[in-house]
Image (cartoon, rainbow, N blue to C red; front, top):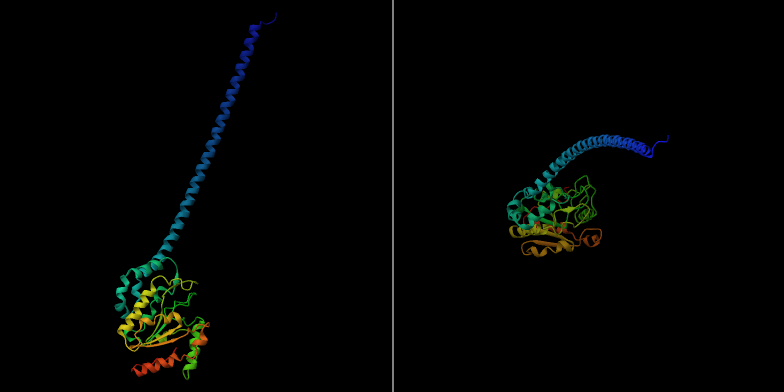
Length: 302
């Protein structure tokens, strides 16, 4: 007997149900495996994130420690700049103290915080160290400090003993050798011995940025050095002002020629030295000082 069509239909239906059941079970198992894999991956990611966080924390700690050390160094320099006026010596401080609270001087300190400069802060006012302002005998005006490393020392035209003599100073020495009998050209460029005798070696601008001549010319220093010249003009008598070059000559309006001697010449730079040679300013200076009962400068002592 052939199976009935109804029974065959039921058999196919049951077979279909079994297939559906197996497919559902397979789908569930696959999903479970995927979830397990995701858990493992997430766990790994979590571990990696933890490791990265720890590494970042360590790196941050190291960087913060380095920054703290750098900040400490910078803070020391900043503190020095904040007390800039404390490096002015002798009675110079008394005569110039009113300048320290003026806007331009405060602005100078603000600007000096921004970039490295020459000379070192302790030497900016080195010219004031060697004598009182009232004992000034001679003033030699420069423009701004040397802008190469280890040259500027707070005295115009002067460099430390172990530094190569700059061209302008070489020409000054040549003129001295020509002007004064028995003068021997020194082997170094330090002019401290002149400063100790009352020679003010004053740059019009007292700081400069590395390798950038004239970079601080608009900072406010000219107001400060102008005040220095005004004080010397007002409080001293019979001072010799050596104005070499157009820049220095422009300061002559600050000097009373009836009280002081003004000697002008070309700058000793190699570009204009031919007009500087033969000026005989050093012998003329000493002659004037002697005529006004002052001890002449021993230019040969260096």
